[in-house]
Amino acid sequence: MGKKSDWPALKASKEKSGRGFEEKYRRISIRGITDRNSSLRIETVMNLPIGIELTSTISTHCEPSELGNRILKMFRSEITERKI
Image (tube, rainbow, N blue to C red; front, side, top):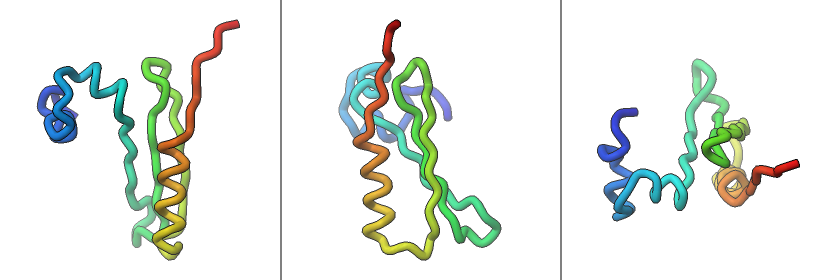
């Protein structure tokens, strides 16, 4: 992954620090998980530094709008730390 200061997304965001970038933006990874990439795994880590991971899978044969909606659901989801 390299140094935060080298991240292309950080440079494109114009954020001044890696910490500020991580607070404002969320990394979402999408990759094929089978030999023929017939399924995709969508992953994100939320609520840093706790590091709760959200993962979803979807068929590559789905409608593009269905894939987009799944990604947006993960992007818009909120998990907050609760103190007991």
